Length: 499
Ligand code: BES
Ligand code: ZN
Ligand code: ZN
Image 1 (cartoon, rainbow, N blue to C red):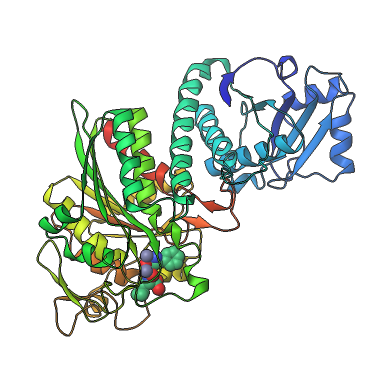
Image 2 (cartoon, helix red, strand yellow):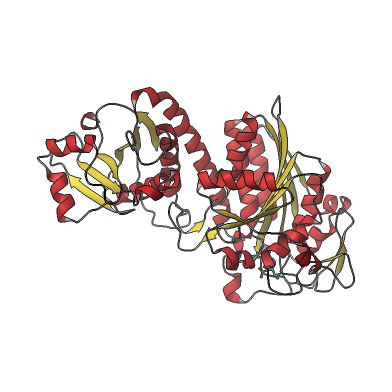
């Protein structure tokens, strides 16, 4: 799909559909639509009245032009309440437009973001958000379907003011890179565990490294053991698919900072000996979503080349029940020397992350971010659409929360406290991998990880158990893996690069 900025009069655009917006309860259309309405002898206003179209979000007014214009259709898209509209409103609209266009078999369209007063963002910001929504909303994971949806959009023009055309084209290309990187993460996360094994994840990292010139080091079982990563190794023991520890590095010429990103990479989580009941085991192929986000972010930075050194670390493995599995009550020593008593083999992600976080702490980066489908409790606390954010540095947490407001990747901070810290004390070791009660389970997970991070390094933990995967899909996310939070973390890296 080609997406580009254009300027000029709506009525002169050579395209199959001209698309414009309207906020809910706006008294009248903007001037440009009024002009089109005149050229169509008032049929836009007439249909608006007949169909009682008032601009509700996601609703469409589809007006055929019967050859009175160069385009076959004029389509007005509702944006909902003007007061509540922001960049994500436009991102969502992008996805809705693409779906509608496919339904109408339109492969060439022009979308007008000029004069969209009501959203305080600049036209080129709108152009980027619209691009993101279009590319994200157009995503399908249909490689295993014999019958595929053949409708394809070929060309999208985004109409802006002439003076913003060049910068809009730049921002459209950034939006495209971000959304395609997110789709790349979705593609890997959507693959089942019989396809994506830890070894396969390592191969994908190697391919990325080759394509973009990253350094990459893959550690096998023996090397993982030599590095003292016994917590991670314990989780991996029950699987026939051996673990792979992945370390990708992006090194620009003049780095302004060094950031480590860590992704939970359970290619499948059966629960292990504490096996999950069937309903809970479904979709556990997506327990590698944090790892997929790391790979997606690397794809984006390979394209955008920020001035920040980035380490991407994944302790990939599979959690399975077996004669060789680790057990409840096992006591294991993590890479940083902390001893862990296993309360439940289904709290495995934190064990793999314990060693991964110890490993990256030794690299002494300026900041550490981990992304993990860590706890069902986080979904209970915040719902399916919002990630839980925790960490050891309020400024860093706030920075990420601020960016997430712009990207539409909803995040909310969960508070650490000393009382819950007492809950992970183990009877026979330094720390237990579960809490004393079910309460505050997402925070318990975060507090466990805290034990493995160098306290001098600002660290943020993002529990993406809810938003990483959604069986119904929402907004610009088709059902399945979402690629959350690729855009937020890439934008953070881009911000650091500018500082
Ligand atoms: N991978 C799961 C968390 C999860 C649950 C992700 C639902 C996505 C959707 C994790 O490894 C897990 O099983 N956590 C346990 C922890 C418990 C044993 C302390 C949980 O949440 O029940
Ligand atoms: Zn688990
Ligand atoms: Zn898990």
